[in-house]
Image 1 (cartoon, rainbow, N blue to C red):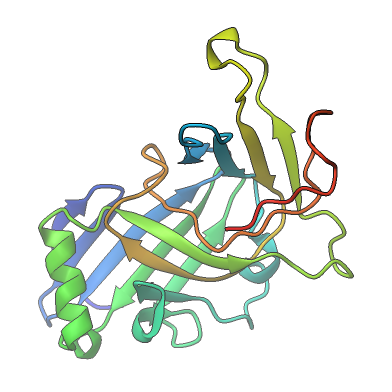
Image 2 (tube, rainbow, N blue to C red):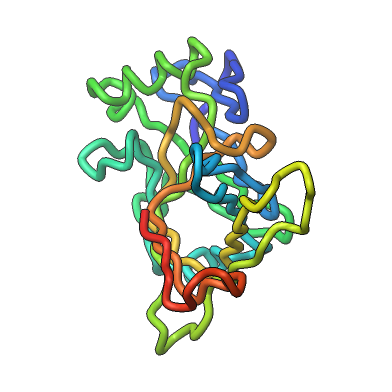
Length: 209
């Protein structure tokens, strides 16, 4: 790692510029933080989502598995990666912690300059994970779906809450509008299965993003 100076805060992210033109990016993805992904509109059911502690542990714990920091979930716009030795990623019960070095070469690309400009302006304020659920042969039930506790003020449209307990993490991307205000992250790429539904809904019903 190089000598870094000039820290600035991009919401849930911290960035420090280096004298050589690069930067160091620090951030975290908090577990057990619930996001409202849909309010259900006029007649639908709200959808909420969270990740259980260490839901991303499978690939994080295996150092041979590469994980990237990207712009806009585009592998053509990389900022850092574990395989390149520019990303340190650690898993804890509370959060995934990242420390990424954006080298001067990457910082001088068009997407690198754009990313740093958004961070400096406070417009890129969170991290969005790129992930998929593991195959059923590996993890039979990587998620659970529950109804929100009854609240008379919500009428018949109680939220369905999805908790992901196991997911394969491939990358984190910078985002401008995080879905989780306290964690400063945004969720993506989800298809629901094993839905726990109330009696009035047919048991074969499924959500699809």
